[in-house]
Image (cartoon, rainbow, N blue to C red; front, side, top):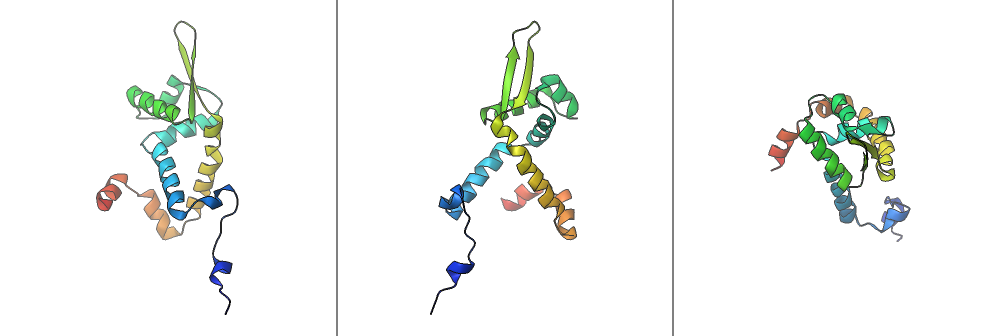
Length: 141
């Protein structure tokens, strides 16, 4: 008798076909950790808007973020390779931030996430808009 499980099973094609499911999950978790934090996604959305931003522009565009937190989050995004920092040799020094090429590649991925979230069933959408990270962390622990 012929086995049909190999015919109906989803097999990803392309360069990722060598990932085992647990390896793929680990890689996605690592990327999500890079984007974790209250402000990183907001910062990235500001940087998606135009090529370069000055520190003060980003600070003004995100209500409630402190200078210290913005600097910390930008440093983390920079060390992750998503953001590039440019210091111009002027007095006073002018510092600009922009997305790296790899950071730019994140824009369509986030767009796909937004489309995916918009397609959620009505009962799930309510959970998404009322999701509280603190309560989910408490429940999981």
